[in-house]
Image (cartoon, rainbow, N blue to C red; front, side):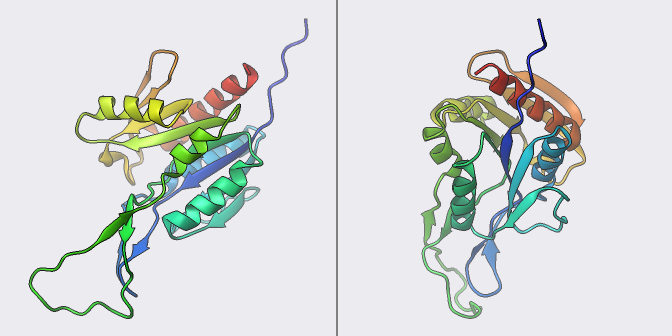
Length: 216
């Protein structure tokens, strides 16, 4: 009996932070370097898949052979990720998207004044939850950086966002060469990885996507 052909996928990857400007020079963001998303894009490309990479502001050159879309804000990332996902087979959401943005962006530079000020924030869209709610037979993999009740929070996100897998890590993974990760699944035991590089984890995630696609 001939071996089953490995599927060639169109994989959308999000990477890096987003920025929500308070004024002309300041913004809300995170320390995400974008290396995890770029590693997933590179691993998927080497495995023969088509890749669209949507990245926030990072200091990493676009990988040759990958369609790269650069954005700044969470709403820009939502627009580009969901547009690409419509024509894709899978989404890997590694981006550290800002959960909130200022209600109003100030004109010019916010000058120093009172000793205490209040900042009104509004919630940004949850891109991964939106993709998960409309995925049908497509694959959705997310990342979660958690501190308190990490496993409980990640397990709830996996279910609530209708994901095929969720990669859990701590804030120490930001910018690190290697870190500890756990991959949670809705239908089997989680996998633990200690001190793995982002490239090693990326290869594992690409393998999981191929396995899921082959079984559908």
